[in-house]
Image (cartoon, rainbow, N blue to C red; front, side, top):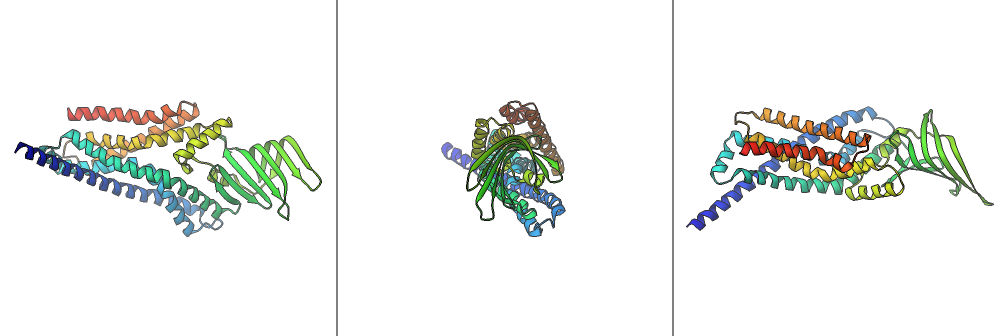
Length: 368
């Protein structure tokens, strides 16, 4: 008889756990869709300023929004998990459902485990979108925008962009912190599409009025009779290619998956180039799933430790303040790490670890 009661209690606990998981997933899904819609509305308003530039019309803007949505979705999952869990658990607390669940044998630690189980599903979906879909669609979105607004861009690759200007084909690998270009290759063809010259420049600085100053140049010219090479420190060239094209389409951490980021960091280090930004992005991407669990853990003390009379609006305000506070702190710490070239692992982990410890402390006080 006691065995049957224990089995029945176990089934009941399993049903209640599944109920919490489903409800939190529903709440988080509604939250992420709502916030994603707001983000896209703001982005749409910004993109309307570029309407009519080249072939950039409403069709291209809507397609651009669709292609950038996976990246935005990936970034919004932690905040949506916080808001969704606060809303659902808060409603359960106000309706005395959590008390009834505890009376039925579902302890507070089991409620927390159910919340974490929902977080596991969210993290799996987030990682699938963020690593398999978002990098590809983000590259397509940036390329769509650039090619619609300008006719110079030929093709965007994993490690830079190719542009065409008349008979010249220009490859730019990266942009330095001060805005100048680096690792530039220019190939020039004649009217018969035969290669007549190549030029490599370590850096290029925009002087204004369609003028670029190339620095540390190696140039090779080809003819039927001979091949000649020359080296010079500086050269000023005219080009209709504007800096904004390059800023949009060069290699960006948003365009790369974790594997691509690791490969690109290795490439930069082998060539003795700065990789701090990409290392920070790599470790931040690794920490992102942990942030979702931290946000869910943060929501629990506000349900268990706060009185039932607290309204849904108040709980949402708590969630917004916590989410915004975390994002602001995370960005400040990230910028400080980049400015002073601090350890990217520490800078990426520190904000999340701090919030995790605070959540554990608040949870311990609420439970015990």
